[in-house]
Length: 529
Image (cartoon, rainbow, N blue to C red; front, side, top):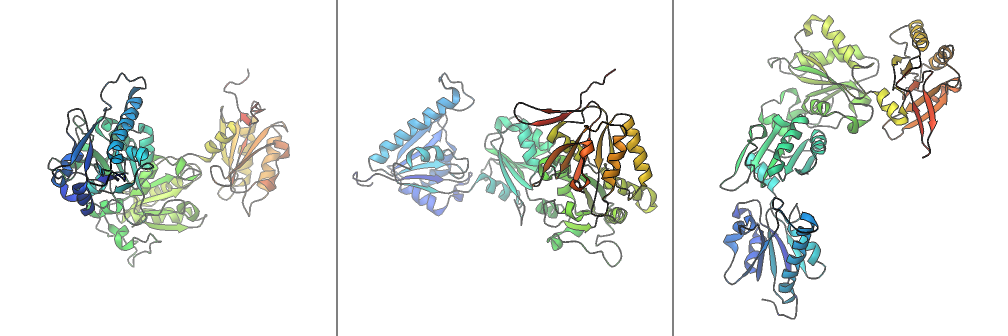
């Protein structure tokens, strides 16, 4: 014991996930040398941390059980459970401060790691500025879970997300859909909503459940097979490395580890695109990334992108998809849609899972039509499954930034005359304008197409007032976003390019300046007469 002239040292010691042999050498030494060993317990007196550390306790040590109020108990504390637990930590800290002030070294045992969702940290916050303090890290439950599963957690550039099961279900769903690997802790009573979040994120079939890892009573099984009754707090749900999962399932194919750099794949000498011709038929999934990256990416599309062995698409769109080990990328220019579709179908015919990438929604002026055109006209691809997954459209995104201009009937047209004559475009513009529809105009201009915007404006002015509001939405959802509103007669073609979408109001569309300084454009739901 230290001289009473000097305060004792506080040590938060991680004792690992359950197996006493997983304590570090330092943790065992520090526990054995402590004057006071404190540990958390419920009212029944049992303590998981103390049971793990039991082999390292020594005679003569003072044991300090810290009996906490648990969330399942009722409390008459005026501050509710938060008030009761705060008062508990304050009182526990003062108990330990008495030992430290008397010169006794105090160890606080913590299951797992003290600073990883560990209860020790609340004492550290209250005492570390008053007494010498040290943290001895421990093996986390996540490390233990992946060890007993025998599966890598993350590889190379994959992203790991750690989540408490107490998060709202929709937040869990969003985060699970947008990560490579994940661990969800604090199950127990939260298990039903956690399982629902995995299901909604499309990740249930890839998830594992681990209970009391490294202990004699531990178990592990697919999350989908777990009976929700009796799930303990000391359990977790795990999404392991998608690369490791593919290898474990024996599905490396042409996107296996040998090709893990994720570069563009070269076709095999036999024309098979490097895919084993004996594999069962693959599939093509045409996906929409939305107009602005992951924040508008649907969970269904995120899953398809994770599972794909090959990505095929216009280079700037493919570049927006995070790189994944073992996934091949096939990029091309902006005017070779049919060639791109045929290449995707050839890869799938040889047995690969292929994602064809579009911006916005793949069925709106995008790749879904090109893929289906080839799939239905070339009999070679008659057996290849083709799925189309929806995405947030540019029109929806642009409209949301300025209010609700699409609140009533509207028409969507492309001003590009690359695939249809301008005479047809002009006829359709006139027809939609005469019908008094709001117009969402895609592909209004490009480097080589500069006159169409002025021509379209002149057509519309035959049917609309000069003051009709026109929304010019550029790079919506992206760093260079700019949304402006002009009158139809003042629409300047020089302000419009391929990165823009135009929304032209109807006769009922309103532009209002609100008291908060914002400008809104909206079209009433009702129509006069």
